[in-house]
Image (tube, rainbow, N blue to C red; front, side, top):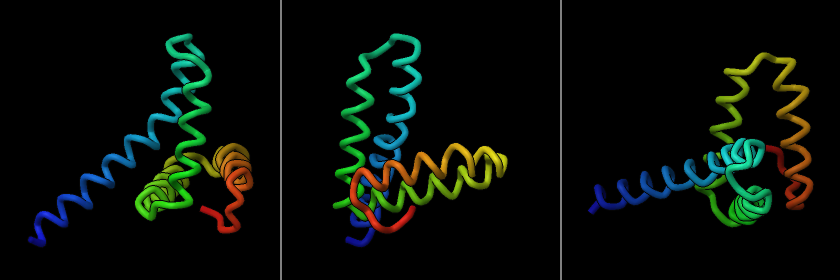
Length: 98
């Protein structure tokens, strides 16, 4: 029984990683005219709503933020990621920071 629960948690976490990673991919696809701009807007809105209601999405976004902080140079993270993160947090009314 515990294995089924562990697999379910793993599966939901992987699904959330895929959903969150689709947002920047949609941006790149829009730049190269591979998809409509509205797709990126819809995906951002969906992730914002899921962030408010799903602990799995919060965990994934915090994990990806930590990985970006490790990989990107400090000035890029500070000047690009932090303002974007703060802007998206303000749109959803979230008082806590990622």
